[in-house]
Amino acid sequence: MKLPEEYYLSEDVVKLAKDLLGKVLFTNVNGNISGGTIVETEAYFGIKDKASHAYGGRRTNRTETMYAKGGIAYVYLCYGVHNLFNVVSATINDPHAILIRAIEPLIGKEIMEDRRNMPYTKAAISSGPGSAAKALGIDRSFNAKYLTGDDVWIEDHQITFHDEEIATTPRVGIAYAEEHALLPLRFFVKDNKYVSKPNKI
DNA sequence: AAACGGATTGGCT
DNA sequence: GCCAATCCGTTTC
Image (cartoon, rainbow, N blue to C red; front, side, top):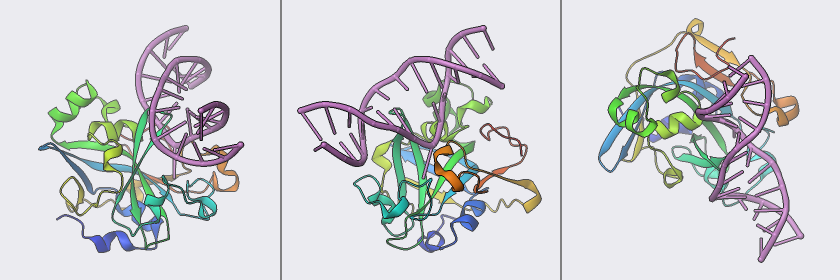
């Protein structure tokens, strides 16, 4: 049920980003277990990706996490406020990452409601990368944690979406990435209300 | 030691 | 739907 390390070693970050739709992302924070179905992702393909923090082979304390072997979390602070959660994939020194942009609450809905101070029926509870991470209780202490461990992991619940149920669009918030800004590397489940805006094709 | 700037959010119209 | 807050970790000097 829990995805094994091998799952994360694929060199095809685009395929992986798409495949993660329907998988269930869990966290265990002080015994409080919550999880949600991944409904929106973005692929970041490493040192050649102008939208990636690792573009050009940039190595700093922050980006070092992405250079590790696939199967760990990359969590960083955005706008000084939001913790964004990424899945690190591929082999060592190939800093691929997949940003989890939205989940649909599945397990531990009450815990998420407390964290977000709104009912789980409200899409905003886990729509958008900052909100999804907060709903799951993810902060920077999750950075570099193994996705095969007991604090954060991803399960296969045999939910699969067919291509016609998946929308593909450019990534959000990366206008600075020049010719890479328009690459079709964002994937989401069509008509799922927890998908962040813009949620049209 | 200091400046920088952002994989966004949510409040307001 | 638009626009502005935000603010600390990261990077660089």
